Amino acid sequence: MSVPGLSLNLATVRPQFGFAAAVDACLAQGVTAIAPWRDQVEAIGLAEAAKIVELNGLKVTGHCRGGMFPATDQAGLNAAIEDNKRAIDEAAALGADCLIMVVGGLPGSSKDIAAARGLVAEGLAAVLPYARACQVPLAIEPLHPMYAADRACVNTLEHALDLCDALGSGVGVAIDVYHTWWDPKIRPQIARAGRNGRILAHHICDWLVPTRDLLLDRGMMGDGVIDLKGLRADIEQAGFRGPQEVEIFSSENWWKRPGEEVIATCIERFRTVC
Amino acid sequence: MSVPGLSLNLATVRPQFGFAAAVDACLAQGVTAIAPWRDQVEAIGLAEAAKIVELNGLKVTGHCRGGMFPATDQAGLNAAIEDNKRAIDEAAALGADCLIMVVGGLPGSSKDIAAARGLVAEGLAAVLPYARACQVPLAIEPLHPMYAADRACVNTLEHALDLCDALGSGVGVAIDVYHTWWDPKIRPQIARAGRNGRILAHHICDWLVPTRDLLLDRGMMGDGVIDLKGLRADIEQAGFRGPQEVEIFSSENWWKRPGEEVIATCIERFRTVC
Image (cartoon, chains in turn green, purple):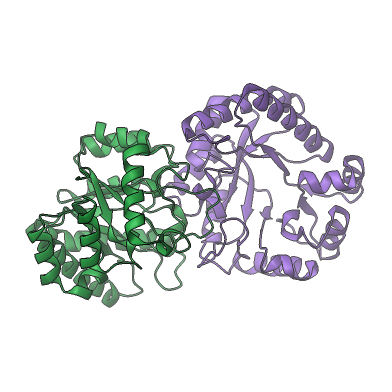
């Protein structure tokens, strides 16, 4: 039995499975779309990962991740730009729908978030021609504001879309409901993203109450407070018809359970609450 | 030696001091502005607290807190409205500059944040005539988006100012840099707040990297990444000249130190990094 419309971000089963085992476990339960992380691909080798994708006819909803541009000097920014080009190469080899861009936070001991945002814009502009040439769309992922300092200084869909407007073609957004559900402007901004053809990915999990860790306490769909069906309706209304990609970092719960159980639960919740 | 321009939110020394002892400790170091919490006032009694304020000529930069409107039924909302009127009475008795409004999150098991926001608007509108009659301005405090579910579903200054525009006179905003520093629209929204005469309070602390707890790991000014001087300049440029109010919840650090040391550190950092 296949599960159309569902993709598994392989971070969801990071401690349980390497790339090949994760793919096997997905296929065993009918999941035929995945999104790997660079270290997972590197561990098995890009050629082997691409072969597994091709032989199994997998859809790759995104490659995680590029970005992390802000640096304390030009050499650091240049290094990030070069590293992003390698990530684009990988995304192309895997046939990924997009390269996910977690843009980076404050460099060094900086307190100047406006300057960091300027470096993000500069870095994106620098890699975009290469991404276009490789036909790999760049998906800017606005991260929750609690990650503004250390992971991504683009924290609202509106800001991400403003960047897209400035950058032109070949760039769009990944809408992760964990990061954006709270935003009072999320609905009009989803509509704006759709009008401009910018929606490249739709990530799901849930916001737990209480949340015990800023990074590693994401919830399984249905266990939290996010209106998943409502946001899905908005995103589909805006024209995006790709799979919903489950991405759960959960050091104390889902990462401790058997990977098969995690995947089975994702499928069951995807069918009932998403 | 007095410390003009600095107010101490008494939650900063909550485990160390009750109301009277906190006031004594502040006065001993020249701090003559405070912001108490309702439970701290209740513990000593409103009349006694008001007497201490008056006899010492204290400035009360805010009374914490009203709000918490969303409820699962009308009776719950009505109870919240009545409770807010009592908080307004207290703020008036203390001569507070404003009543801080932490508006509340999702009621019960609701996932409908738009509905919760509607209840907030309804509750604010219901208490506002009473607040106006008592000459107690209501200060809507946008809280960081990580509190959207369980504390406050108003999470940006822009949203708070939209509410103010809809409500009319007698309501404004408390700008806490901990909650708002990440916002790409913070500078123009501070300017908007100033143009409309809406800035009622300016709260400070710092955002630590890493942040180990969503609620109780706020940093002392200078220990984190917030551009405190830059935001102060924006807020003063917008016309607000009241004290900066230090509000630090820190279960594993500042709440474990002697209260006198905490106050001394607040003063030193206020003079050097704010």
